[in-house]
Length: 465
Ligand SMILES: C=C(O[C@@H]1C=C(C(=O)O)C=C[C@H]1O)C(=O)O
Image 1: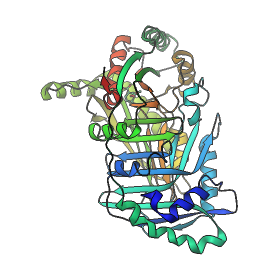
Image 2: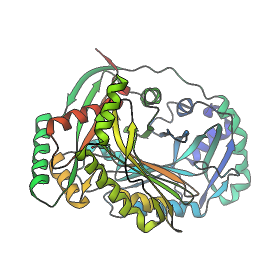
Image 3: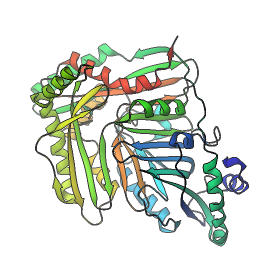
Image 4: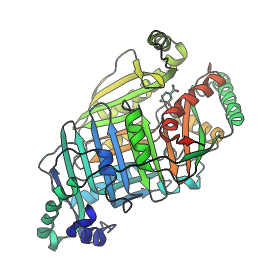
């Protein structure tokens, strides 16, 4: 175990949370190790690292990235330039870093994991306080799995004169990996489930639809709502991850812990991925339910593919992504028609958008330009955001926001953090939304949001008393 390694015990205690702006530089070591279970790695040295972990898996390239221990935290609040601020701080830290990584595999070496709030100018609720409007971690220990390859990265701050000795850290790699074991976790009892102000939400939906029909100034607005769950005991993030991993294998699974609450989810929606100069974004908007009967399920899919309201909602997202990426990409490849993306509870219209980025384009530029897409905000963005602030009357926090990672080489991936919730001790808050256009129907939208709660509800549902 970590704690048993004499080197690490000493280093963790003395170096943890040291500010990068001292005379210490970031030193990072990456080694190939035997493949271990990412959830088991997440549990190492528990409870010492509770509140200091993150977890990420991507369904299409089978990447898992798991970080434990916060070596450095990047945080800001209500900043107009939060994307460029985080990028500048990260680049400053990397400029003096000593990086021992012969592999160059994306997602290895020093890496930032975290995200941005949905809207820095919304009402702020205390429960989201620790997340601010941007929160990223550089972890102490990080496991990266890409296909069959598994890497361990260890990061520390070291003074220049100690650099020759920091090589010792490599000796502890195998010891650490050999001690990675899954622990048994059970769920607490669910004692209360409360849909927050449904009648009020339906009234807001109707008012927004009226505005969409009559004002001529807005085409689409996404409204969301909240579900509050209470448990007999605090819910363990390990338990939630384990459940999401088995139940939602076709989605991006993520967990971002803080010392006072963790944000988790299983999102099917990529915001942007950048590998060298290859850029991939997606429009995911327009929804219909699933059926256990394969014939009916196919019929539902065909209805969605031909439904004008949903095709319109979807096209608005494609158009905005195109506009946002055009200035940053040499070429963009966008299919003319969407296809279906099916998750266990719901199917969506899906259009991939591929491009080749112009030199000097960073993933933070792309995230800043794309967020919020009309899949979670609306069209036009500014008016839609104002309506969301006025009508939702809640703090989305990190729900519907960009969550993801970028490595020291500028590769990275951010998703749109939907099908998600905040886990805070004995309470959990789940979020779900829906795109409204002029011919939306409030009761259909209520049903759609109920379906969208399901992935997290099933994962954290716990045992009912
Ligand atoms: C807002 C959510 O989902 C978004 C809205 C969709 C829609 O309105 O059809 C579909 C996928 C997502 O882009 C959510 O899951 O909370």
